Amino acid sequence: QKEVEQNSGPLSVPEGAIASLNCTYSDRGSQSFFWYRQYSGKSPELIMFIYSNGDKEDGRFTAQLNKASQYVSLLIRDSQPSDSATYLCAVNDYKLSFGAGTTVTVRA
Amino acid sequence: DAGVTQSPTHLIKTRGQQVTLRCSPISGHKSVSWYQQVLGQGPQFIFQYYEKEERGRGNFPDRFSARQFPNYSSELNVNALLLGDSALYLCASSLSSGGAVEQFFGPGTRLTVL
Image 1 (cartoon, chains in turn cyan, blue):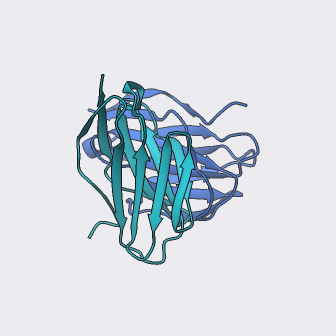
Image 2 (cartoon, one colour):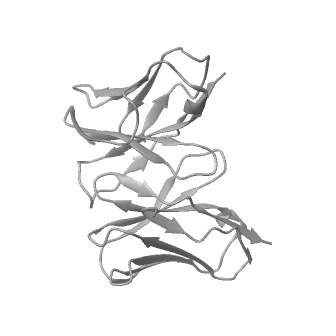
């Protein structure tokens, strides 16, 4: 079983819609969770991190964590064409363990 | 403030050769981690250094080695290159080592092994 799994995608959403990205992890002791955005040919860029159960909002992004279900998600509200990228979920226990990523395309 | 810098940007080598990749962390950051990303996959952890000490090593062969210098910059060395070593090599900088610490990536070095 992979440590971190993400919905495979690709995910296509119309401009202005909500994009929902999901991630599950295998280690129940994991405490820190990060979301990175990676444009094609570029390096990952940190979007958000979350440590506590519940929701954390930052602008158009909301991260949700449910440790009992070992589940973390990212919602992108009012999606824009500039949000088209691959989104990487990572568990941080000093080293980052990444999922394979979900590619999002926002249609204008 | 300058972000994480890596050099070179691109590199082409042949099988059996050796390569050295370099990374300078964000000013004030004392930890550097190295990751390998092959096309279509998430980055895979190779090494982490903090205060010039190795803090962790991923599941990579001994052909991979690294070190951190007193100014906190770091080098990743790969010996006896294989075709499968072709990848984007990413350096990540953080204030310290630990789980609840943000890691910021440099632009990466794209290595092609022919």
